[in-house]
Length: 305
Image 1 (cartoon, rainbow, N blue to C red):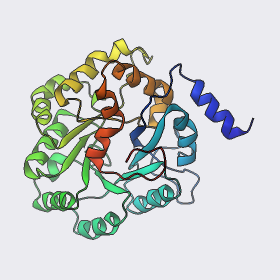
Image 2: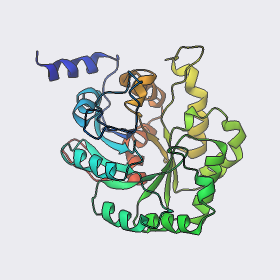
Image 3: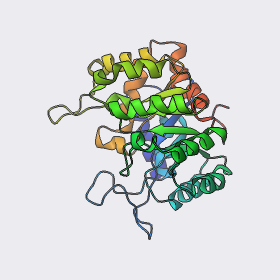
Image 4: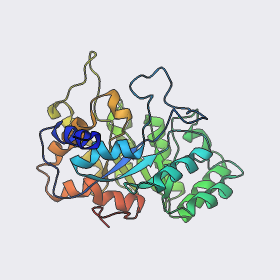
């Protein structure tokens, strides 16, 4: 058996469930290559789990047999030219249907860089939140930053936020008021442990049709272990899905960062089990809502379009 066939067979049998009848679009993966000459800003060399090439071929071999037909890359670097690096890598493999890049709306050169990257149809938006020593709440007090977000909305691109806190969610709500035409995607909300402190903000966000949420980074470590049973996470998923409704929740694996918790297939199985009894909501979660949130375009046979 060839290596590619072995990997595909292993991935297909790693979890005991059949691929769904509809395609899956993964809205949150990361690409990087620590072997490139310039190195990478993340993950660090000390992270033995993640510090290895995370490239489309490896992702396709693992996720394809499980029904995944496309993926959106989310930035993993504050370096401007790493936007181009991802776009160049993605151009060679059509399983990648888009990039959520890294630009700073408050900078004087933001409009120039936005104009450059938005010419590539794979460039779908940017991420800005509690990472790379940036603070959305502070930036929103600057008119230049808000003007940058308005340019993003005018270009029909989106804004992701990450590493949720009550302050960041309040900032996302403020963005939705200042730039109501901007689509906002809240990443990794299940991982936020103090959601009760932001319950009112979440309810307000749930009323905004331009705000989406990823049911990503669901697994949690408890007493040194990561539970795999859906029963442990069901209340959290019910709470978030109840606030945002079936039309604004998205599937995102957070691969390869997800390897820090449990294997890719186990994370996919968890949400597959959760949506198994939810009828049409499952297909919305696994791909239809991603089109509304990101407006990505089909690149190969097997992808919905």
